[in-house]
Length: 112
Length: 113
View 1 (cartoon, each protein chain N blue to C red):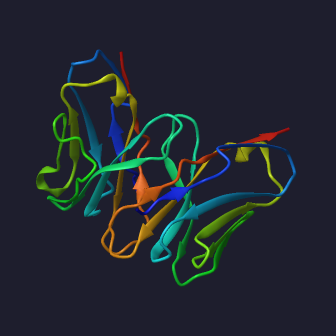
View 2: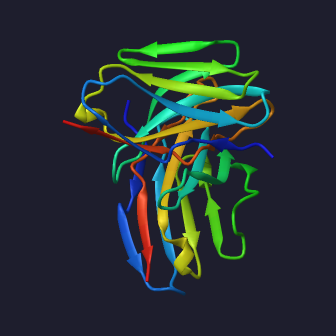
């Protein structure tokens, strides 16, 4: 079964720290992987998308990496700010499939 | 470009009542998705349309849930009758055939009491 797992479910860090969020997936035959941000009561905002042929993608203070062989992706957030507080979701689209399969999310809190 | 529009934003109903949600995707997007997100969980795909046709409805509880996308544009998702466990946020998303990303609406938060 194709599944996506995110651990931990919640993370709290002081402002200014660099941090890493983890995502693991079964079945390495992925098409792409996306990281989303979800603010309370809001929809999902796509942050970064990594194609299966890529190893990483960067946008501002965010860097996402992909290691298909180990079934892992990480989202690195540099110099965290209180405005980064949100739930971060990882989603995978596998080859031959149409849908995105989401992890449970990591609820991130940045303390001023 | 205008985003994915959903209505209503919030809905409270009693169990066994019926409810309908509406989604208007981004103009020109052929693919439309309905996801269910239960509190503390990631979104789960209920149904995916490509134009008028259903691509995947394997996780749609068809005894109580139905969805349609007439004319390949906007879509409605209906629950009848609702159960307590249907309390969730219902997210609509759309994507074009040539673009990889899906764009999500704000969602409809349903509470069944």
